Image (cartoon, rainbow, N blue to C red; front, side, top):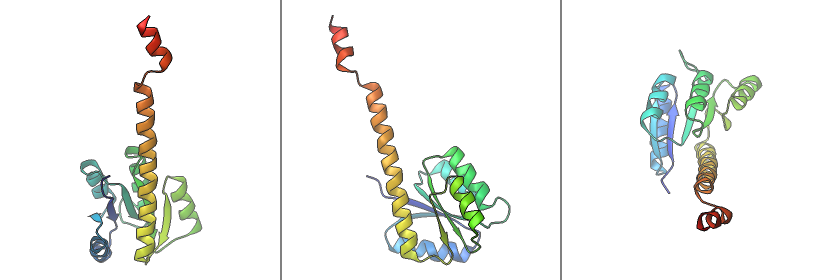
Length: 149
């Protein structure tokens, strides 16, 4: 099983560098992006499992980025992160496919715990997809018997 790959997306450089260092110390593989477009480019070129995404960013905000991620990379799990949480933005994010929502400043153990939950969810979905593909390619006993006649 491959290790979890996380991408942090936030326009605050200090948050990105500090959080990345803390996650690296925990043995996690971490990429960072300072904008929505940069995050989408990294997703295009890397197999990222979980995205920790800030809601408030200039230009392409977190909600737009979330929708683009889920449209193009539906298996990528996204956790929204904000210092400006409202009930409406939390509901919008969850309706748009975010797995969860965390308030800034997020406790590092909470963030890691949510990322691990998201990674496990993705692994379960990938396993179901593999099983469905296997069933599709395997022949039933009836089909095998028909071939022998």
